[in-house]
Length: 277
Image (cartoon, rainbow, N blue to C red):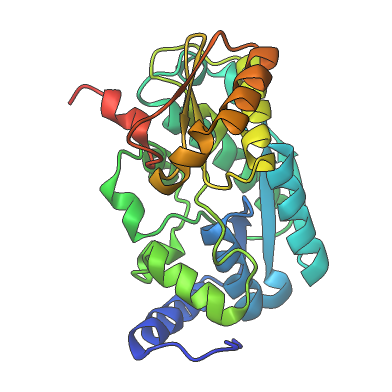
């Protein structure tokens, strides 16, 4: 496939390994969120397999509208076959009650539906976009992936997040520098029940922060408290009088009683620190 800028030998070896793995599958439906990893995987899959590759995006209350629009735009601009399916993880008690295995119940429902869509379109394999870095965190969703025989091409090729960003940049993909994203359900402390209303509150709160120029952010929900995480370098701006007052007033309108700034700043999977090990 075409890479617009040169990449080093090690990255080229991993990319070649990925292409061969995908080619050997013959046909592939990519669980497509529009994020860094799945966009890269989908791009390589369509380059290798042509119309034997497709994108399937599952939609539920935990997915912001902006993410869906970006996924639709990417596929539309490149003529990639794209199917959007709706799921409702809130029907699963383990997800709704926000147990430590919440992601397992969600991924099981999502990929069961994606497999159904793939079969309808004559596609034999379904892929998800986890990379080597995902093996270092608590990821119960990978258990569902294994149980459903969903393939993980990026891990098979030994690609890390940094690798994927570097190759994506060389390929000219718009997502190469996109901030990491996780579904809105990851914003709750384990054990706090997830509802559609709470998910919408978080979505509106995070959208407001994005509109204020905070592109890498999280709003964590602890009961009626919103705990805001932004990179350490952005904390002074968030705490400045003009910004913090606007954020507080908007979050109160959304339904939060208290609004706090996390002193450690943004870190991926911070809620996993609450799990007893």
